[in-house]
Image (cartoon, rainbow, N blue to C red):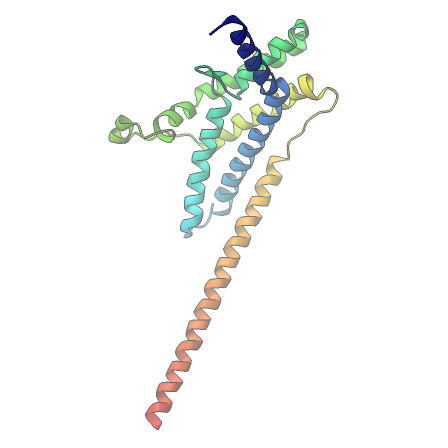
Length: 237
């Protein structure tokens, strides 16, 4: 490859990188991911609250709960993943931290911003105390044979996940306000309100299911009564 073509290729690569490798893009994408994990956690909490004093006999809801829990763990692991996988860049909090340092290094002379990034480090420390990454590597990304054979259960409570999300949401909102939005502060929807909305959705789903079963049962009874009347009439004839 001659020098001129090589230089042109490098320029094209640089322009492609510049299109997506920006702090703005990472902030916007991570905001969407955090909204998603908050909604997933709220849906799980609503399920636990609704069936706290009663058993769930709906297989669909049971499977939905399991699927949401697995996806929640996977999504959190992706958000906390390393900045690069080989030569590919990842959209993660680590990448965000790198970009903040690169683009706003002059701001870190201020102790407030240093404390803000230290708060992010505290969130990383809390994440590393939970077996979320281990669960992703051993159970979610693939079925680790030793893990399957041993049958060891990796326990992570919803309460621990909610606490992690709470810490993450608080620090991320401050980071985005400081380094992206300027004077415009970002706020996420109140978590308790999300839980209540999902509880209402579950309640409506259960009520609709109950009504369908009631109407189906009554319809069967009416059909049986018609058959009985027809049988009696044919006997009389």
